[in-house]
Image: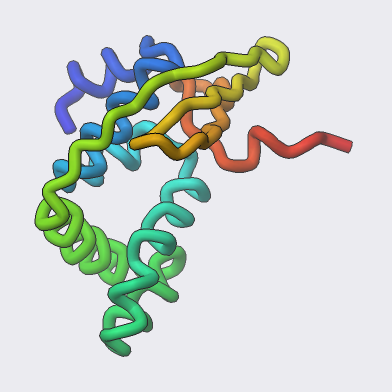
Length: 140
């Protein structure tokens, strides 16, 4: 990812990130998806999208299991998933329903993806807003 693109992503609002996330995901642009998410949330996303493939391919399943510790396994999983996501030829319609600010550092966006109501959580990190699945949890 170019430095200019990364710098512009740092200034994005959560609602802009939501749309960029879906656009990038279904174009197989996992480098961009990674930049939009916290590290842990990104791995969870790979695991979710890789589940179907891992049920059919034991070698892929092993690589998916090792993405945290093995950079080569992560690269292989990203390559396979990127191709698989592009083959889906999806371009879901996203409609934001509500944006809830949970203090200065967290936000929740309720949205509709192809008629399904969903929520996505965001946290303010040192380099801008990021999708963070754990930002929706209560602290304490």
